[in-house]
Length: 65
Image (cartoon, rainbow, N blue to C red; front, side, top):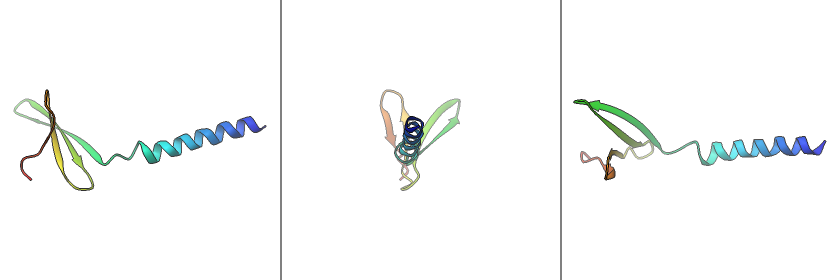
């Protein structure tokens, strides 16, 4: 009888930990296409800071700030 209770409690604990620690990231990822080139943009939803992904370089700050 104790074993099913322990399993259910462990699953609930793992779901709770996932929902608190992993799921809510501070970034929103957007994808834009301009002149046939696809750009990936990362926006911090708290500060509004944006970066775009440049292949070979990585995440680069938006120069319009």
